[in-house]
Amino acid sequence: MRCQLQTRARIVSVVRTYAGGRRPSSKAITRTMSAKSTGLMFQLKVNPISGNSEWIVIEEEIDDVSPEPMLATTSYLDMLNDSPRNRAYRAAIDRTVSKHRHVLDIGSGTGLLSMMADRAMSGDDLSSSKGMITACESYIPTVKLMKKVLRANNMNHKIRVFNKKSDELEVGVDIASRADVLVNEILDSELLAEGLIPTLQHAHDKLLMENYKTVPYRATPHLRCTHIITYLWKLHDLFNNEVDVDDGIHLVPKGKESILRVKPQQFVMHCDALGEEIRLLSEHFKVFEFDFWKRPDSHGETQIHIKAANDGTIHAVISWWVLQLDEEGEVFYSTSPKWISSPLPNNGWKQCVWFTKGKGIPVSKDEDICMDASHTDISISYDFNAHTQDSHITLSPERIAIYGDNHWSLSMLKAISYALKGQDSPLCVIADDSVFLSVAAAHVAKASHVISLFSGLGDKGSQYLQAVADENGYSMDRVQAVNTRKSQLTMNDTHQNKVDLLIAEPFYFGAEGMLPWHGLQFWSKRTMLDSMLSEDACIMPCKGVLKACAMSLPKLSDTYTIMEFDFLKPLSSCQGKAKVAYSSIELACTLTGCNCN
Image (cartoon, rainbow, N blue to C red):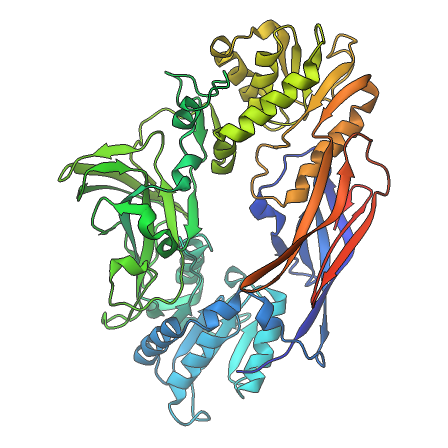
């Protein structure tokens, strides 16, 4: 299949700005939606300076004569090059699809499964098929690419393509009748996150005949308990990390280990790369079975009992899934890591790592391990401590690792001590959601007054500071938390005192996974507080440096500084432009006013 397509995305207009609203998660940054009536495509974009979000309209322009293939720049290429996966799907489709079938391909992408279905109907004579194939794909650029691929393979007149979500298709309007075969590959490394369950539910209710056939036929998640030896566990164990740090700061005092806890989430990674850094503590075992040939349930729960294979501490479970692609159980595909020694094909899929809470789960060989598993429409979760009380504040693993970093914490304490040296009763303002800096500023300067602008933590941040006050040697009469989402800090909040130290990490709760320059929100807050700063106020950090490196795999090129941000000065209307070119790769960053493009 050969196809060339050049796409240029142009922003047409700003639809709406959500000023002062809750910042979206990193997933929401790239979220798109379409308007049925106009065919317009919208994208949610985050302003990195203010933290506000806005919907913009995207217009796609097509240049058929451009020589550059856009397929090479998409994630579809890895999937299309997965030969074991493709062979397994081809074998299952050949077993399932015959002449006179109506095949529905949901999330058809570049049309590969639709073309396999057409070949299965036609046999060697590609002109003899009397069946029907409906391909459904919601993403405009991929639909345009699929149509080119179908034309290149002389199948464009056999496969009807709809640029819609499958739940927008209507029998009697878009398609004449319900389909009797469903093919799809709307799977991710965790299995459900691409909306598999709600998609299959709607298809079962509205688009498919009774007793329909499906490829794949069934999916089964598998797990294995492991002990993590690497730095990965440091992302989840702040209490033990703090024990070895002699800085006088106790973010999780003894007896209050759950006051800060790691945000439960799955990490997608190639577990083969962990190599000798993990130790297996159980055999692998099945969790759920998701049958695609019937209507799936939105929610499910189960309790699993397994035997520990070795002594150790369970830090995590590693999950993957196995596909049974045909009804007879002859064709399978697995995303297991290589150390499973599975005879099933797998060509580069990642696995998911789900960490346990707290200090891990100590087990002895042959001990019974009890684990609760549950799933929703879009995710699967595992829990060894299902009945433990929720933590007061939940932080990302990356933030936990930073707070447990001895070098980082001592450096920050040294900088704060130097900034406050010689001041009798300094006023310190923490300009972000850093609980560490709030505790550190109150701990270092016993006569200081600390105001924390907890824009994301809100009241939880204030409650946390009060809970750890005794262990860190400060009283709450000189520590104050202000939720700046409700009101901007004023001189009334500081009792008419000027700010002596303005400090941030910068870290904004709920903004994990955002790009590095989104930390420039600190600059915006520093600008708003400019009139409240004393003449010799210390600002930390005082400078931001954006660096980039061009890359020619497998070797890494030199690193270039492409822009510096002077936080000692307020943010002006135009801070300038920077551009660096290396070989055929061009890296650019432009700041204009309060927009980062």
